[in-house]
Length: 428
Image (tube, rainbow, N blue to C red; front, side):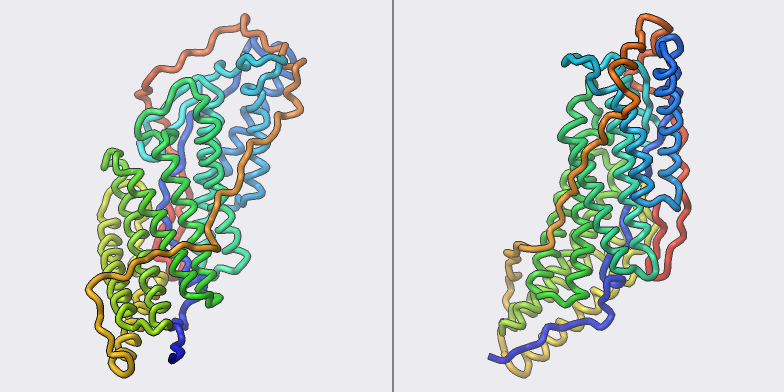
């Protein structure tokens, strides 16, 4: 048996193979919250908790749009606020009854797909999950911004990978543990409903695996492993796309175009590297057919790139088909197919089958799993003794939340990040 070397493209590095263009929906926006419980907060310690809630919430919201913020700074800001907010959620009187402060304050939040008209609930858990949702979105944007740098180091690639898995862990935790506790379920198309949560979580896992694929290519791992990882990643994107297919097109079309183009892009990767595996196994006819299918998937991804740019909706104004990661794969498919055809004409003389080789691939290594997330422990300020000084019989009752809020909440002003060399995109 003749040994055939796997085709390697000289331009393949983490920078060239990590698809540092990601679709990003906008951050959620929220109305200011004063936590002014005049008369109800009946002690200096109770008043301090309310004041600290107001200031730590404001600081956390500032961190979402601060380009100097990193995961460590974000963790400090989130832990401080969430530990105080737990004082309005956790049971502090030694019983299993709801915290008496849970329904005191009304909170308003927009949704990433629904413009500036907010949802409102008078429920501290609604605030908890909405703010944590935004933290997860911030981690995806941080990963996207870091991956879009001109020269991504190995350490930075690991940070991208970790941030995406951490975001997936937040979405998973919210969906499984805290969103079911809401008194008022999320309306269809709102961020906290299962389809949206699942799509964000699966997208984060898929994007994390893109980093793994880039690393595997750079280190010249076995083509079978790379093909399997690409196939699993494509399936993740397909699953995310199918999860959105029952949403209104006007709010999900652009997002779905992104998921579809990524699916076809990674199917092209899978067929390309599977073709290399077949060639190394002297199955040259099947290898050519696999590479032909890679070309077909790549062309479809190229067409979807154009459709993405032309589709209205939240997201990027990117030109993905002009980026290095995209053109590099096109060159690899072309070169590998030409090599297979040359070998077949000189050595094998195999008939090229009409049917596409089956991708019965299962990655044994490199699959991205969400990083486990839990909210911080209750703040030391929130003691049972302080809790008893909150007297709900005093002071005016907070206004009840209306089922639907017509007024708009001012959108979050996100930084306008200029594209780096070879990225061809603006992260939105």
